[in-house]
Amino acid sequence: MPSPDLGLPEVASVARDLIRFDTTNHGGGRAAGEREAAEYVGAYLENLGLTPEYYEPIPRRTNVMARVPGRNRDKPALVLHGHLDVVPAIAEDWSVDPFAGVVKDGMLWGRGAVDMKDMDAMILTSVAEILRAGEQPERDLVLAFFADEENGGVEGSALVVKDRPEWFTGATEAISEVGGYSIALGDRRVYLLQVGEKALVWIRLVARGRAAHGSSVHADNAVTALAEAVAALGRTEWPVTLTETTREMVERLAELTGQSATDPDAVARATGAASGFLRSTLRTTTNPTGLVAGYKHNVIPDRAEALIDVRVLPGTEAAALADIRRIVGDGVEVQIVHQDIGLEVPFGGDIVDAMVGALGRRDPGAPVIPYLMGGGTDNKALATLGIAGYGFAPLRLPAALDFTGMFHGVDERVPIDALVFGQSVLTDLLRTY
Image (cartoon, rainbow, N blue to C red; front, side, top):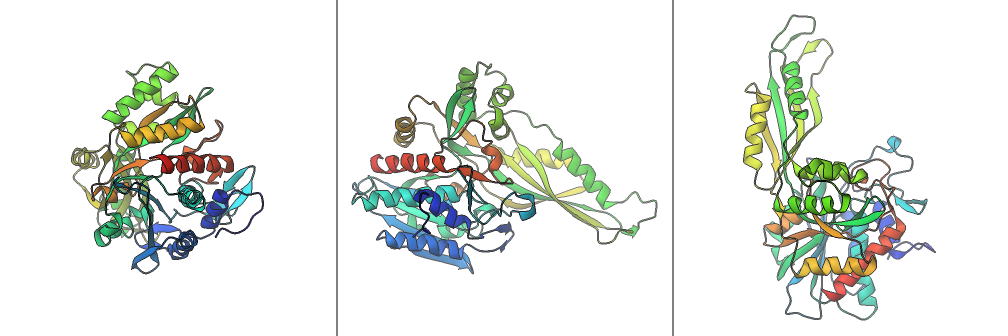
């Protein structure tokens, strides 16, 4: 059960407790591990009368699942899933301890407050509210909490769907993070419902040259070749390419902002703080994120490497890689470190109607529009089992909060009243859909 804290709603208490587990994931198998957080989740589920199952294919990389029987067993099951790992936080850059779960200014602060221990807590407490009332959800629910999402799920959801596919028997749809939250368009609140994700392609650029003394005249310098390739790729302005989802998003946003839908970038910019997040959904992005070269100040190394985070629209992976190889040139090798798939599902049907309806009952009159996320979630692993995934972690947010800037940012935080709102919306959805 959550740690007692008089006056703090249970959803915030659970999210705070989860933040206090340091589940930092550096990637590449370097991680603190999710075991203690998974055991906390499992104990919470047991207290609700459920039977959690654990899967730890790699020491300390723990996944946990429980199934909740629904009233209508003829309906397909719905997966509600979250991840328990977080990206690193450099404590000295923060104004609070990133793993203390600090509550101040009406907000819960800490690594994972937005990505995504807030949604983990909403899932748990929404199910708790229904079961404690002696009720059942409308259909069977599969509650899954994964390891390693921040490393592409390689040591988490990818192994779970391969080795424990029976966990998801009968499920056809899934709900997870990064959707259902509000943005401000002037004085109007609008909700973004995530129905797609760009494909992830993590690449390594490798330049090779000839080692030499640092004082020499030396044209065959691997660092120079790498720097030129990184600069060329990092400064590439990729063209806008609309998918079915982003076309509808742009059209709906244009109607709400008074912009012309013929200029998608201008439409996205009109969303204010959310513009960076939304502009990235309109095109390929290639961001350099790491450099490795050299071992002494006066030695020119014979090898230099760079890491590039590439996100491409669904179905354009091959074309994007061909363009990347052309941009960096023949002298720099492009290695694929990790690659997954892009997703796009229709903004329509019973589940979308149910999510839109649940939001509308808690925030009447606020438009809900589709968007395609620039990042990725564990929905990609579930897609290999034929499960259609959506992003729906509902939050009603203050206009002044740069929420999208909180993802992997410093001083990550979420309003407590937004957590309460999200739990109420999610509980409504589970009772009715």
